[in-house]
Image (cartoon, rainbow over all chains, first blue to last red; front, top):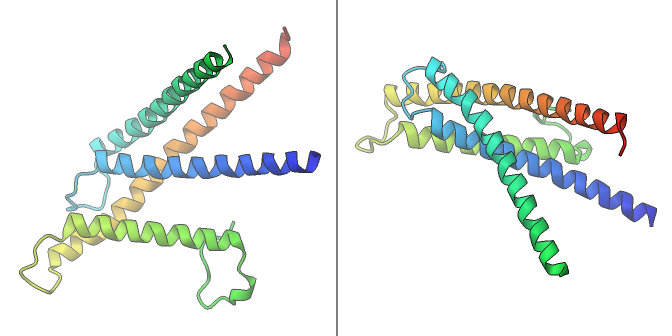
Length: 84
Length: 98
């Protein structure tokens, strides 16, 4: 019993790491798309682009958290509704 | 953690971790090539790659790496902040148990 619990925990942890990696990849693609125009006259990140990236990362993670909270709330409501 | 497969490495002592890292590298290589191709090459009146297209693609590569580096830095900062908050919250819970 204890062994299968440990296995479950490990599986959950692996899943969480995978989920984080996926989220990070999506964040990278999204912020690159939103902040870097497809004109490459220069290999340097322009000032405005840098600010855009910083804000984009912050906002993406903020939204990620908010959606997570709301999703948690909704699934809690659903569960309680099912119990009734 | 190992970064990439050394060229000509004996395949018998390659562990799953290295395979995963190599796979991730190949995926980002393909994504990068696709991005820089679509952004830099749109003229097909000639088979040859123009100087401007070559320059654009190389700039695209360099910038992509820099952007990724910056995003990773910001991400880590947020991660650290979230960790600190979680620890502080846990300590608070421990101090006044209800």
